[in-house]
Structure formats: C-alpha cells, structure tokens
Length: 139
Image (cartoon, rainbow, N blue to C red):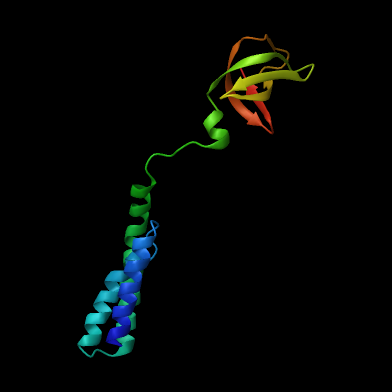
C-alpha cells in the first residue's frame, strides 16, 4: 500500500502542476501522512481515515481564504464593460419615434434615452446607463 500512496502523491502533484484551480492540493498533505503511516505498518483503515480527515479539514479550513486571495481584481466584460462608457449619438434619439443610434467603441448601437420624452440630438456625447436587449439606455 505504500507505493499506492506514493503514486497518489505524484499524481496529485502532476494534477496541480497542470491546473491553476487548486483541485487536489488539500489532500496532498493527507496523502503524505498516510504514506508515512503505511511505511510504519499502520492498518489500512487508519491510513484512509487520516487521509480523508486531513484532506477535509484542510479543504474546509483554507478554501475560502484561497478563493479570496485568488479572486483579485474583477475584470468587467460584455454588458458590464460598456456601462458607464461615453458614446457619440449618430442618429437623433427619440423614444416616441423609437429611433436613435450611438457609436460606442467602434460599433453602432440602437439607443433609447433613460428619460421618457427626452430627445438627444445627433453629435451629442452620452453615457451608457444600461443595456436592454440590443439597445443602449443612455443619458
């Protein structure tokens, strides 16, 4: 059984080396201790119990911390990346006529105003407040 623990330890190290998600790292110390117990001729059920207990304790004790440290700065993408950006009105925006277009980050978007009844003339700079479907909501 000693060599099985060695194989599991090596396999766990290889998995961790090729992933960035901390998949099995919490069970590696338990594997090491179980391997030492196997070399000391401790019964297999005790080895398995120590392996499982150490892995689970380390997992529940340190995973929340590792997730917080790994998270870092959040990168805004897709819809969230456009909110707050400034665009240029290329076609007058009028909610009543359901017309309007804004050029934003090199793309043309259909646009509506955040305020009902407001008209925003062509050539005005606007801020994106939201995206509803394929339309920018601007002010």
